[in-house]
Length: 154
Image (cartoon, rainbow, N blue to C red; front, side, top):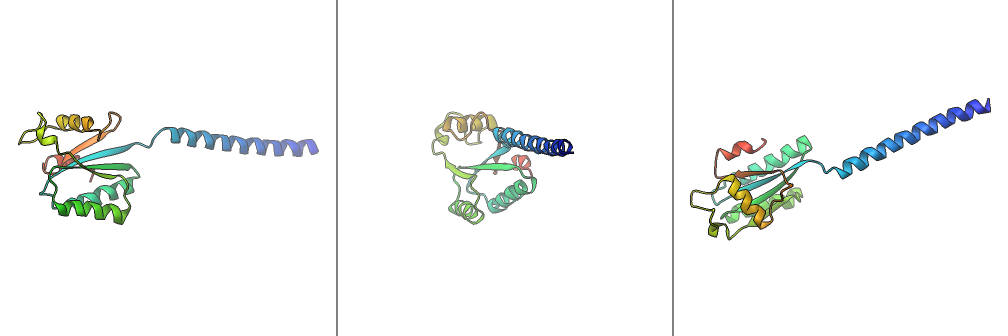
């Protein structure tokens, strides 16, 4: 009778140990694999009247879907109002993944012309400036170009 009782307790302990081991393996595997997210790069200029709407839409979309989003705003002559909107948004909502980069030398690069750069040229410039890594899955959106707005997830 005691042997039967000890074998039942042993089976329960073995099952509990296996559950804890599976839990540990699952979480250590997920921690080693970084949660896939997107790095959006917005190129903004002085004519951005919908900056707050774009910010709210992007981060509410990321919260609803559970995907981590990093946002880099490339300042191509943004107005002071747009910069203030971004600063207020980051303070109010506590978004840590918003960064504003002012790249003063873009106008002096050989790839830039008055009509604008292609997406490949912008990514090349941003990689040289250290904004984008090769490992990032970057989505480049020129907010001045209506065709690029289709790249946004909302």
